[in-house]
Length: 133
Image 1 (cartoon, helix red, strand yellow):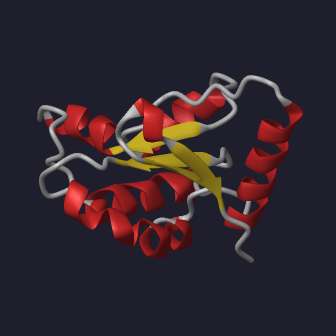
Image 2 (tube, one colour):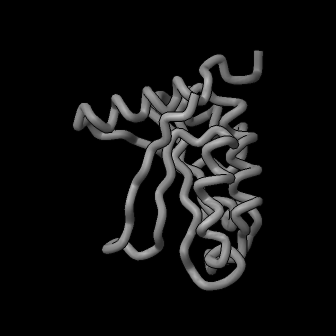
C-alpha cells in the first residue's frame, strides 16, 4: 500500500513521546509525498512541512507567498503517504501567508499534522502538539 498505516492520532502521540524523551528529532523538509517517503526510508524521525519548503519547490522566494490553504493541502497529501509525524510551520510574515495565521489551529490539525510551529521570529516561536482523536 502507498498510504500511511498510522493514524494522525498515533503520529501525534509518537511525536509527543519523542519530544518528551529529550532525544533529538530529525525532521527534514518534505515538499511532496514522494520526498516524505524517501525521508521515511532513510530513517528520519519525522518530516517538516512549511511555506518555505513549498516556495522552494515552486521556484519562489521565501517571502510569504504561499498560503495557509496551500500548506495545509500539501501537508495533508504528505501525511496521507507517510507514517512519520509531520511538524508544520506556517509563517507569520507579512503578505498572503501572514494574514492567515489565526486559521492554523482550525486548518492544520485536521489535515494530519502531528505538531505545528507558530511564529516567524526565533525569539517568539512556540511549538504545539494536538491531542485529537
